[in-house]
Image (cartoon, rainbow, N blue to C red; front, top):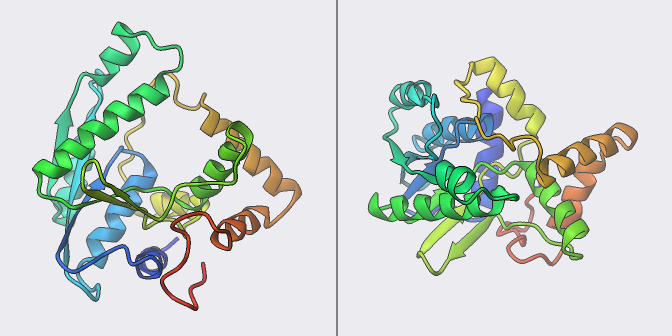
Length: 245
């Protein structure tokens, strides 16, 4: 995927769901993976020609893993002229060594989001952008069906009243396969997660299941996404009458 296509898809999501208001200061949540780096690339470029002015900064919550270097991401942020902030924590030690959680993902995610939200407020940001793409939307819906018994997924825009921060997801129209292509084309400096449960979660199971369904039913992922956009799931009513994905 070329940069112009990424710009187009991200800008469409921003417009369809009114994700940006004038003079927003938006934190880009950077995990070190391909998705968040692609989002950083897109938002860094779009800010220069978007119809309303906004500012961005990049934020990584460092969980405290040993031998986990964020220098390549710092270099990319310097190249894109984006301020980069690394939030040091001991989350990995607490979750895996002190608490020894059998199912660590929930606690880790809660602590990580708490640290990120605190940092966002300190940096004067009113919004945070997550890099969830179209595959994530579908996989979350599938997880909800299987484990909660309801047709649901996260919203393109979510206001968190406890922290007075709004979450936006500008990558919802981007396929993961396109993100992979973008990463390869532009040599994104992906920093692999050292988490011992990476790749062994329920989300990974849903990811693999959707891929298997796609092999035997071409186009099923897009049809599942359409079912979400046409549903009554809160937050998925487009602001534009003629919006398409």
